[in-house]
Image (cartoon, rainbow, N blue to C red; front, side, top):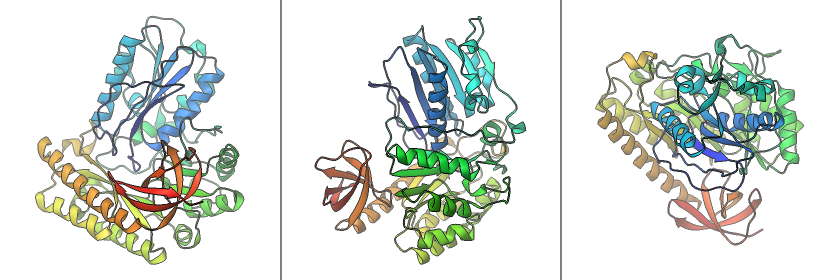
Length: 457
């Protein structure tokens, strides 16, 4: 999956802490919050931004079905660690909430439903296609038998992306909108296509309606997300490209202040998208690249569609069009057969591309993938290489932060006086601000890896 930004969150009403570790299940640190409510639907979301969007759809469906005392676990399969944490959470909740209905869904549940159905306390396992259908979320699903209900179909047979309108995102300042689902590519390390199916695109009209609704709800920033976003469009009438869709979206929703994109493939940016980078101020100057490695042999063995030079050229062209643009990237450390020299090439690529926000995780073999059968890099060495990449990422971030001190920025406040600039740098604001608000902020310094600032208007 191209977008490996990973999160674990649990939401409903007032929260209390749940045990979690800070390992990198996909790309960034996991975190969790838990609601004590017994008369509502609660959600635990692992994984990418697409999962965050789908959790909101499920929240609406489950509420409409009248479900109570129900916990939905939306799993991730991008790494074995992500699955381990999901199973650990399920068992913990089953012990602490013996009367609750526990529903397991998401990529891990789609790929291996029986393993989750076998966990004591699980009431139902729902696949990725079924979870998006309102009729799946009825009390009839929990018929009271001794065995959990398993509602999982052949994801590869799904040809359309279900259309949904959601009214908001619980506890979030920015909204994630699904524009694409599934993936037609078969990277050797990735199991996600077997959880998501083949690529399907959401029609422009549905996207426009959703963005308009969210803007009316007060959201100032929308993130377009999917499994392989740059594959948008060939299955739709007229075969629009991602750039064409975005240009039309921004023209039809002029009141949207900020638009951000999730992971992009270095060789699949279309010319309309490049023109948007150059001339559309509402498209944020922060792009995230599905890089995975910076060595050509590793990329070839991963069955990626780009080479090292393609990533460097993408960054060069973007900066020629918009000099202030910044980049993040997903990188796998310790892919099978990766030598010290190959790893050094990846480190050098980070510097040559001048990447800032690195989503790094050690390679995790997924059963059934070609990479799992290749000669493996020892686990401790994978972790060492991941640590070196993260340290380089910290240095790159610090370099960017130092260039921004003294400037002004538009900051979208997320929570606790903390927000994000147009470049996605984190800012702690001195003074009263409201979550979800956009403020002009003077950036005054750096503390603990974040910018500091004060509101000037």
